[in-house]
Length: 312
Image (cartoon, rainbow, N blue to C red; front, side, top):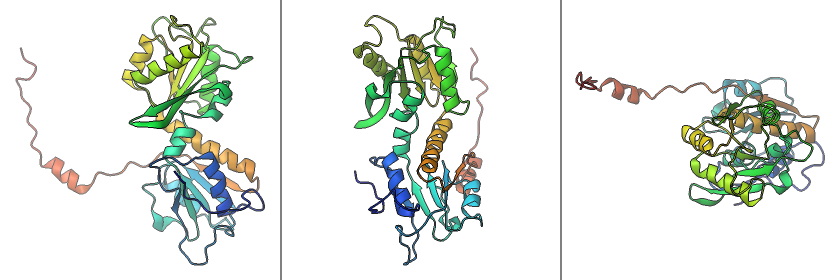
């Protein structure tokens, strides 16, 4: 799938422009099927030229929250800010300053920069990313990468306690460790391999165990107590399957995964263009009110409680 982006000849030369920043982000977020438009909101005035539109300020966020609009409309930037969003659907285009560009990535960021096929995260957790095994195929899409399994690098402390601490540092303190019955964080708890997955069903547990056994990271008749399963949201069925396999699991939550991706993009932009002002807005979204029609429909429903319910 070809990703819509601006044509740019020398993306890394000269001051950052809309075209060069867009090109740079597209290298970190490969195109995915059914993703949102990468160029989600573009300036419409005839004089706009992305290769000449200098950017001095970039705002990154999961969603278009009030803080995003405040940052975009700050009087300080010398040029209209550029914005990146992961979940852009509620964007109020009227609140975007004239001349600002909004870039968006939903599926690709979920796949490559949360808990999934995230080789950068694997490396930061002390895993041997070069030999990582890809877990691929999900929801009818055989090419969709949903995660990886990688062994712990030699020289890295393989204790479960140490790796759990490393995970929590990466996710700004988030992470609940779920241990199977009889397991502990004692000195004898060692991790041979870690699965980084953005799905948490019994099927994924089985696929991770099969991959670890095929790679000889655990024996054919061993349980999965030496494999740590890292994912986002905790799911009862996933936790039950992991416990039955003897596998520890750490769930960092859905939103912290997205925040990790946004922080990583911000870090890469700062490294590529030190002169850029890069601002991360990681505030929670405001809950949306239910449509009035739906509220009226709910109010018109008669509620009836059967007093015989539950009686013998």
